[in-house]
Length: 410
Ligand SMILES: NC(=O)c1ccc[n+]([C@@H]2O[C@H](COP(=O)([O-])OP(=O)(O)OC[C@H]3O[C@@H](n4cnc5c(N)ncnc54)[C@H](O)[C@@H]3O)[C@@H](O)[C@H]2O)c1
Image (cartoon, rainbow, N blue to C red; front, side):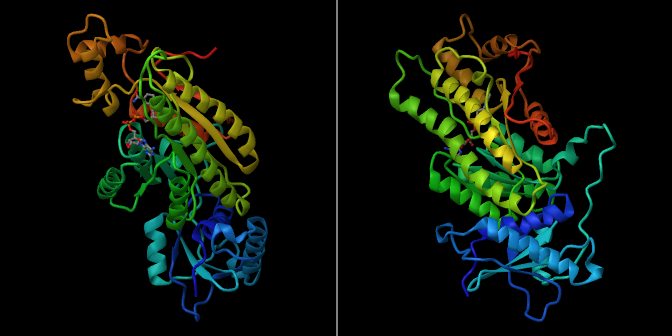
């Protein structure tokens, strides 16, 4: 028997759990339970769910899944408030089993035990009326994906999310770097908190495969951080067209591709979880809010990103997907600036871009002095902005500066 396409069926299964539990969890594909097992939810999906090209009708499939779940509960009064220990989805010829857990490790353990017993999902503790949620509570148990996650801001974000109890896909062109960081996060946290994925955000097939892989590991996603970005500074009078295009491809077109395939996955999951809101957060830049001298390719791609954020937010609100940008100032401690061989500090020192500066410390002071708060942007600053975007249920399409006062919105 061939397998169902997990990217089609798993988000529908995860959505059923999200809707019933009201709190996030992972749903992992695993072996089918023995035929004698009692209690799995059996889903008969209409049409074929063996590849997107098969004309999978996710709307009908979602309605069938919701009806099957209601019937599963109604079949036994003892199931009130419980969820099934396993969902078996079939489309006539192919079948797949999906196993839930608070996180991927727990879901896989349930699959290994073939434990189909119904259970009560852990309730999400309600925040006191009028209070803000603690930082951890905002993303605990959520499943997130961070592009460009292997280093720099992406690494800070991946580590920050994992430390706050999320499951994180670290997706990067540098696949070895992504795997290495995921392994380090897992070793430090003692749980299957992170998974490395290879992706080139400017390649459509690669972006699509990345989201398919995420669905096949955790069932779906709650937060997509589109962080991968590149910078090639240059005068408008001198920059070659190839460099301009390269920056545009990654920063602008790449964000479109990430938002497109994130949106398709999150919409599918939402079909069985109509009350579950999800987030796309673009890591933009202060250069998306004001021009950047001799850096037009970058600033233009980032300004364009904000146009995309606003437009996608208007469209995707219908599917419960918020789309916001955060606009950090210079991450002076990050590799882009501080790399001893290729960082911007050494480059600017060598090129004499900062008048009179004779040392790296002087170049750094020059950039710190531009910031009212007198320091560069740090990972924790970016994390606070991301948590705000996720927690805030009543905002979308915004561009949030994180610049120490360097850029102030009108
Ligand atoms: N560093 C800063 O001062 C600063 C300031 C504001 C905004 N930003 C933005 O933050 C984001 C991250 O920047 P950073 O400074 O951490 O960069 P970085 O160069 O340190 O890291 C970028 C990561 O993205 C990956 N990447 C590059 N191209 C990719 C592609 N096509 N597909 C997938 N992954 C790719 C790289 O391998 C790398 O791991 C970017 O969007 C950048 O514009 C950075």
